[in-house]
Length: 300
Ligand SMILES: [Zn+2]
Image (cartoon, helix red, strand yellow):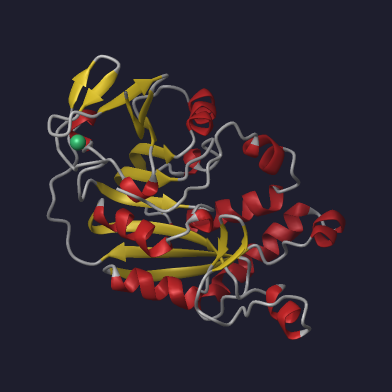
């Protein structure tokens, strides 16, 4: 099965260089506020897509258990070092286009700063929809092409692509910005109903961040986030969507093995064989190492 290319953070020091030392406390705190406003008070099993080194994971306080999913094993190793081996956390390396979970498993999912890297966003969103139950909450953050920087740049001839057209723009290899209308259309077509939209990171400008105290920027951003309900021109947009329908699927089983299906052929359940899971149908073996279930490529 061929799938679109994936942006791989394997071996990247993204958490340190971009977040810890990258002068992004403002963005991080603005995101924390947006998440708090959108997350349900309680939930059972959350799928965190593009969990990276687990920067946002401690913010999902209402969920009983969290599956951290990332394409990069080294990012998950960093997350595991940070969060530990509590039974609350399950670490899974997998391709978003071939999710290794049974349908309707989760009652919540988040995808923050991740759709940004999806060459085929509707296909990725469809995968997410498949593993969510009716009534489940999905919190999606996406990079907005229709923003306060791109609009004047386009008007003054400083960029060739139009921020007003609906198709995604790939401004760097495997880095995409999306039009809010396109995102709404895709989500609606997949059977989500849109509950809330927040406009986040109004002040993502180097000069402003250097001269204005972070707490002041965060305060004004938090006030302005609500404008997302009627106007989306910030670089980052958060959407809360719910899968249409009522929850008719029983709660997830405690046994983690029952959650997985073969990402190649869809067979379920897989057999645990010590250091790997064996697919009973296609015979592929999926490694378990360093506390991470690895569904990227089968073992040979
Ligand atoms: Zn299989």
